[in-house]
Image (tube, rainbow, N blue to C red; front, side, top):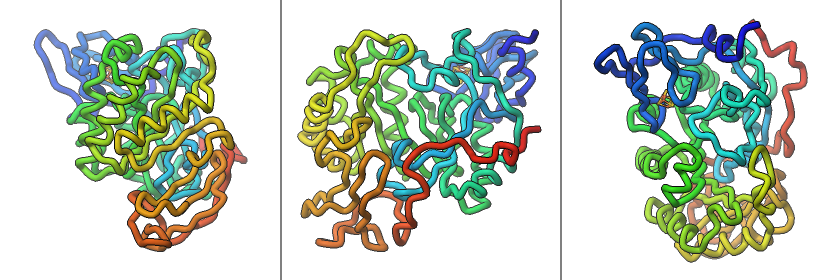
Length: 374
Ligand code: SF4
C-alpha cells in the first residue's frame, strides 16, 4: 500500500518560478516559507511536501485535506465582513511542529502516523463553485500552513476573485518577501499567528521569530488587511515581559491592527499547561491596551471576557459591533465603516451594510456529493 507521502507526491506540479532558485550541485532553494530550504536532488524540504525531483521543485497540487464552512469570526477576522461565511480549505503539512497544534490532523499528517487525513482530488473551479453554492463571501486557505502550498491557493484565489469572492490566509506568518510578493495580487485578508515574542520559543516550534515579524510589517505596509492571534499558554508565552514586547511591536507597526488573545485548551502533545482562564486573557488584553493597541479581543471563552468580544469606537467608546463567540448580536457601523456616534472611521474591510449572518457555527458542506471529487 502506498504511503501518504507517496500518495501526495503523485499530486504535485512544478513550483512557481518566483518561489525557486537553482543552486550548485543540483540543489534548489525554495522560497515558499522562511526556512528557505536548500533542497538536494531527491530530497524533501522541512515541510515534507515540496521536493526536488531531478532539478525540478515539485509542489502540492490538485487536492484538499479538508473543507469546512466557518463564520469569518472563527478565523478569526473581526474587522472583515462580520457575519460572512468563510469557505475554508486546506491541504496537508506544515513547516512548524507545534506540540499544541489544534489542526494537527492536517498539519502533521506527514510527520505523525496518528494524523491521517486522506487527500481528496479536486479543481479550483470546483471548490469555488462549491463555495458559491454554500453562500460564502470569503475563501480562506487554512488548516495546514498555506504558505507551503501557495501555488494551489493562488490558483483557487484567481478563480474566486473572478466570481467576486474575497480571499484570505490563516497562517503562521513564516514568510519570505518572494512568497508575499507572489501572493499580493491575489489576497485580501491575512491572519498571522504570532505565537511568541521569544526567538528561543519559536525555535522549539521549529521556526524563528524574525521572519514572522518581517511578514507582519510587509503585509501592513502593502495594504493587506492583517489581524493577529496569540494563543496564550501558561508558562510558554504569558510572561509580562514577553506580552509587553509582543504588543509594543504590533503597536509600532500600527495601533489599528486587531490583536486576538485566545485561550489554549489541552491538545495534541501539549497536555501539561493548564487551560487558559478568562482572568489570564483579561490580564494579557490589558497589557495590549497599555501598549497602545486600539482593538484587543479575547477569544475561545465566549461570554466570560467582559467587553473583549465586542468592537468599540476608540474615540468615543461607543460599542459598534456586539458579539457572543462567533455570533454577531448587533452591528452599528455606518455604510462607510464609521462609528455612528462620532464618525470615527473604524479600520477594516466592511460591506456597505450588515449582510446578515450566514452561520454562527462551523459546518461541513451539506451535500458533499456536490463537491466534485475527480
Ligand atoms: S515551503 Fe518552507 S519548509 Fe517547505 S521546502 Fe519550501 S522553504 Fe522548505
